[in-house]
Image 1 (cartoon, one colour):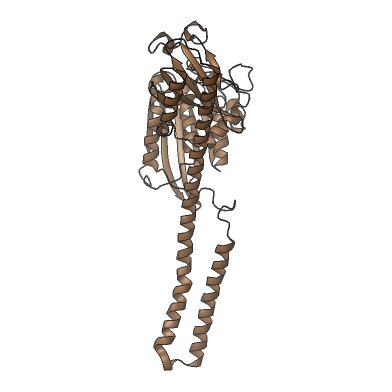
Image 2 (image 1 turned 180 degrees about the vertical axis):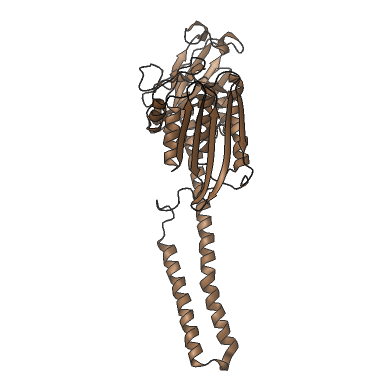
Length: 413
């Protein structure tokens, strides 16, 4: 149930997937809201537990800093610091990972879930591998007693693991389909609006000719015919444009997608997902927003991945009783709307050399305030996602005082 201990590719460590950065990029491409997945996978966790004969089964997804239990049977869906988990070892390869007795394994015997309730003993997990070979997380079964899982049951659990990845892919595809349908609907509205003009002009001119009857002189009739011809030509050109248009062309606005958030809902989602992390670390998390434009909708496209990594990083490197503040606003500009985000903490700070490494996409590791091994991938991942979004990021910091991340993201008109 519990994820992996990440360091970086630049440091030699047995606990880091060799393709870690690529793995995180693919996970972010699924654009998942970890708090809304349980209903899609609850049946599979129950089935896995029944097949394995264990009390507990969990589906865990592992991002830069956190293991998210998105669905569970016999145990509530929770989130944990990545370095505190067992599933971290599972995603290192493509084979099942088994621990017969957690209390007798030096890696896990001091963990809270082993020493205290639920006092787990047995763990078996299998990586959730995408067709690209990236492990998004793990399906695991656990028990308070030692167990044995037969080869036949292992094969059935593999099938469940494949089904989990298939459902994740289906959810992603459905989301993309909804966005495409939203785009098409907007295009239809635009075309209908544009066609009304020429058609209205033709009808109006014809009505004038009819109403004037014998009073029409030749010069006026010729002028009306010219205007009718012009409107008709405009209509034909528009029809040709519609018939030849590729609605999925790369030249079309990339952010013309289904509108899902506004500042108020984004603030609520941030609290829902990351308040637990702050509470566990005893760090005060606050999210502030400018109410102006607060109800204007914008696409959620990777926002949780970008903002979540910033907040998780800030919490990780802020000491006990410290503060993490996020400010959200939406600016209306001539080139469209921009989501403006700032995340400030009063933690360890970042050296100028490290800032340059982050902005250049490098992945060197550093230590958290509890001596946690730094993962080195979270902030470069944010830089990668912001660049993909065609946004901008700035970092300001003073060692031992604070770190401030400023992000601007285009979110359409």
